[in-house]
Length: 407
Image (cartoon, rainbow, N blue to C red):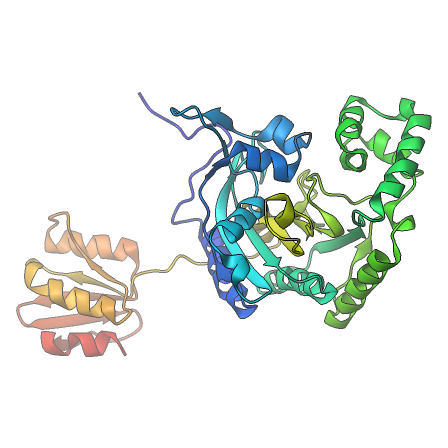
């Protein structure tokens, strides 16, 4: 019997060089902005996921992998990164650290959905969170962070879409206006829109139907109902983006499908490939989430960026990466005396290997040629002959080999 990865999952291989390059760039960029890396469990309490995402959200209603464990506890594979990070922030005392607390994770997320290009049921996501500051400059900095990540790949085929969905002070009055409009235009809604409206009227703007989206263009927009504080915050975010030189498009119907979002919401769309799944990053403020999960009222903002979709977009734009090759492959018929030498070379940062398959000397050379290392080192007795493409062979004593290969 031959087994395969479950539908909607995939294996990431050493040859997926662009994927691994992206991970490396993330690990270089995020600390430059003061972020610390965090890792949360793949499993979370189901009640926490429902409370943070909203029991009526698409995530909870359609997409979570939820089950009872052998102890009868209801657990859910994490569908997104923000709520688990906020839970960990509270549980582990990070809320007592100086604010803001900046955290990020590169982790697998799980959502049951129809697999498509760049969309997997198990997918890897970068989640970046800033907890503790309501400063609009923080919103802009978070957005600029993602722009910087794209810049490192010379990727320019993106559009930043921006909106504000207000907060608990101005949103109720807007929801009354929106509900009244939806009542008057009930025939314009499809079943998906009616279901979203029943749980959170704002979610009707998140439906996929082009017919419904066209009708909603005439619906009242949240931007027309922002209170003075939310409006000032949103204008300050836009001003800061201007200082960074980041272009954006105001999209008054942009909402996020999770209940915890407030004020700033944004999405990055890739604009060149025409893939159905064109969102490569999405996020926003969640100023009530920490309190919802048992903490003190604390503002926060974050985003989730799927690496699978981004790698697809980067590859389509011509971005590439190389798999690191060996610096040297050692050919020898007596490897045991060379093991300490290998350890010393690796300690000094030299990528080196030798044969562990019992090949003959000639077969080792052919194997090394297939691996295409920078150098092939042929050891015989106390002498090492270094072969390097474009150079004459060089013979050195074994005692000199480490110094020679670390040049």
